[in-house]
Image 1 (cartoon, rainbow, N blue to C red):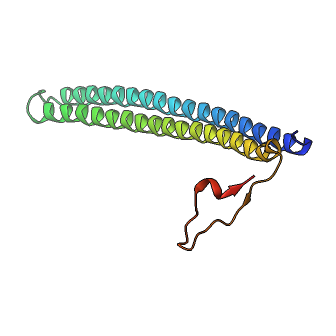
Image 2: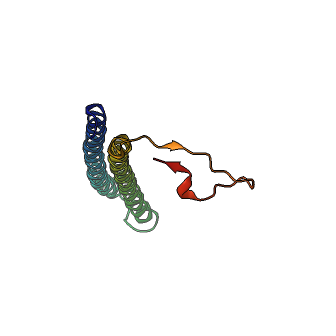
Amino acid sequence: MIGLGLALTAIGSIYTGVTSLTAANRTAKDLEYQGQIALDEAFRDASIIREEGRNFAATQSLQYIGAGVELVGSALITMEQTRKYAESEAMATEQRGGAQANLANRKASVTRSQGRAALIGSIFDAGAAVAPGIAGTKATPKSTVTDSGFPQSWNDVWQT
């Protein structure tokens, strides 16, 4: 029969694994949420950049017209360049937000994997703690090395 100490050790080990898994899942959810916030903020910022670019180009247009400059040639090129710069900055902002979201999601995935690994490890630790009690004896190494330096058989390496 398994001793009380071995049973408590096994239960404690499994509880530790379950706690680690739960904490990892919570942390992963937080990371995913932070990634979504970064992405949402990036799209909002990109929208603002685009709007400011359009507004600035419109202001340029009004200033040119107010100064008596026709909206052709250099004036038109300058306004188009303003729009292109704003669009380029907006796209870069969206890409940064996407990269931050992807990084957060990868970190969340790794965190979940670590939690699962902790749980699986704790189950094996519990099994290792209980196995000798179930078998009734402790596994002890047995010297079965032949003159060649190798064990006679792998079954002979451990005796129960």
